[in-house]
Image 1: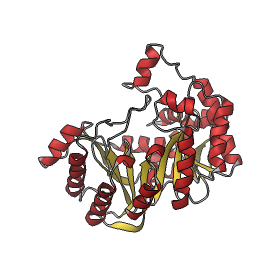
Image 2 (image 1 turned 30 degrees about the vertical axis):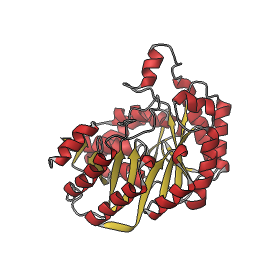
Image 3 (image 1 turned 45 degrees about the vertical axis):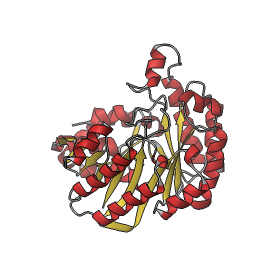
Image 4 (image 1 turned 90 degrees about the vertical axis):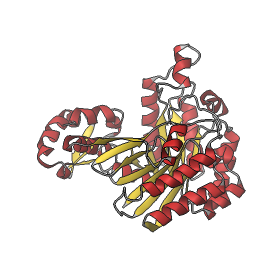
Length: 368
């Protein structure tokens, strides 16, 4: 089983913190949709005949697409690859793009899961991030989406300067009260080449406080546990039965094909990524050439990737999958077990709540 990711590189305006590939100009949208369709055809053998179980429209802002564009892409995937009848098809949408008419059209196009970029239920935070929607739009259109979709998720961001613990609690409580089945919660990250880092350097915005972010993450974990959510991956919380199948496939090391500029693909032996330039991508595809770079993974890289991804999950790292290095991993993990950052249970190394604060560092320390 495998997944397909479609990158839609268009946004209404730039969020200050975002470092994903996008443009605020829709000038070449039609040309890019045509190129996406051509790339799907050109990549028809990449997944070696495996059945597609998830399709994910990400970006950028897929909700800027016309219904005809969505139908065209979905149908092309279904006509090119073997697709499971119960394929999860996720569509990222911003609250300001959601209308009842659009929701009906999205369902008609085959979308069966929405990912709604809420980020915060407070106007001052949304303005700080340069989001387009308002807090009231977030609540109103989330309730509208619930009328048509049982399966949906929202994004929330913590650790924003000015976001107090009490406001963070209110954000989470609103989501719980609305019975949102899945939440993806991220610490605000100051990335290179973003407006945010430039404004921080020019002292126009306050920098993030790592200690505050750690505290708000610990609070989040406890609140979600108390509300009955499963913390199945470091950034992901779900009510029973509502895990993201697409994102889970990344952590489980399944194959996936990325379509569009900047999209990444993985076939278990190598990974590749398309050029992050819309015009060059379109021109290359029109010449019959997919503009990508490729890295063939060594056995050590494959194992390190498994260590990194598995430690992010509730199941943890299965030592039985690590061959003759399992004893070495246990030896390296002992100091984290003794300090309460990790536990060993039924051949699995699993991070504790405190350990999740240091997940990347602990994983790197275990690398081969």
